[in-house]
Image (tube, rainbow, N blue to C red; front, top):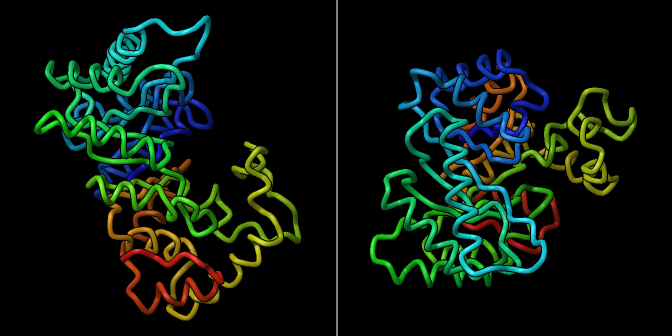
Length: 302
């Protein structure tokens, strides 16, 4: 289980962040996923401060801010951009190394070789241990993996992608490409921005203070169709005496190439709920029941 840190520096202040991070560590959650853009850098600062002397217990994953194309592209620009971004993240996190460093989004102008050149430089300097991609398509995975494979032992490890029971498009091309390349798949939004918690029922609107109220661009997730799917999934979970949160996370943990699932939290209590959900990894029968409930064309990959 991984803790998504996008709430740090936006919805949570430093003290609240420390409470969430401390609870996660105490419960054995040691994978923390942040990014340069979260809270305009505040997420990294708050996470670093919250870890403090417990930094060595944590696996810190962060992502460099995508380059904004302006006035064309100069060869070498992306490599310089990435190295500067990594240095900023290291300072904000208060650490000497990043455990997993992500390309947050593909660059529309710069060649992939330039990104990998920067990655190799950071790896050689001991500033980053492993590298990963995010928000990429199958073709971009294939290209990056092929080029990275030309350097023996180069640590390109994973792909981060939106993947949950209401958003299964990644299963068509992205997940198979990652599997073929030997990369892990790290799902984010495992609870579909809260819709898979069951707290939205369509009868009382969007609750005040909820993620969908805070970020209305995600409100379409609470569509009538999706809420119908949630009810059917809740029935599956009920048959096993589990919650829909446990079902949603357990379904992802059952997928063959998933090493960790990223879930955010704004309170220690939410961390406890997410941690408890790790106890149920769905088996073949439960996975089939989920697909039947969703009427899914794509099948779970176990």
